[in-house]
Image (tube, rainbow, N blue to C red; front, side, top):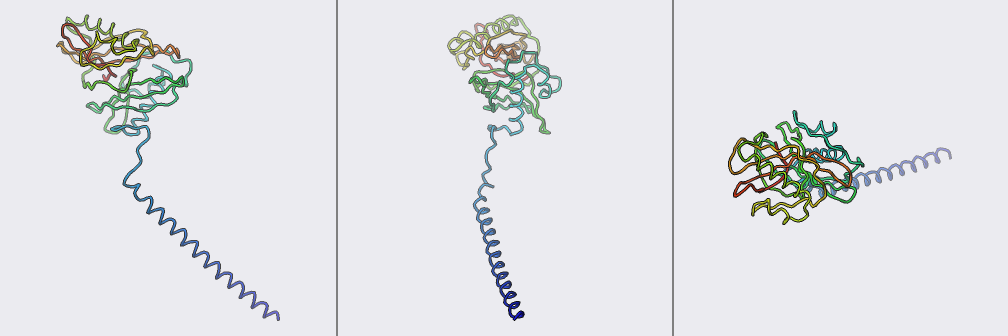
Length: 280
């Protein structure tokens, strides 16, 4: 009797193992089938990679991230030591006053890129502030063949991501020639109007007929103009000048050092043809 019971138990165990093996094979093939189907469905993604968030045409993710970090640091502590790691060797930015709220920027992204020669670019960063305003920073940068990125100086605060395409590889120099006084006078009158005006028509007196310049609309105030230099050594009827200034944000209490690049032409007098971020 004991032998018969043992035989039945062994037979039952053998049958159970056979069933489990069958179930295991079914489970394995089911998983393999699912993986195969998922692989087939995912295959087209190899031919159409997803776009990089926060990047615009012509700008890689590393450069976009660098410029966004620079913009955040600049708006949080303009001219402070926090900006030193972002700057190219030998570049200095004038001091400013940080805002009352150091966490001023809610979000920021690159909205436009202008490529120049020698690995230099002007990237415009749209910075949405926590008080619902938006500031656009035109940041001059340089990229080396090794892929390193550095800021070439203070950014400019612009009205929108637009701007004239001006290319210059010259280093800043003191204004020269008999027109130096007239150019300085134009910068001293134009820049306050550009910052304080809300209508483009307010700038008509300073601009050439073909110029398209959108003023800042009184979002900031001009604290001071600290210097006017020219790019190149020419004394002709056209100049490219850099105007260094400090702007005060009355809402946050911050003061920012900025540099604007003006393209000027002389007709019956000197006019502004374009304004945008400076690349020294």
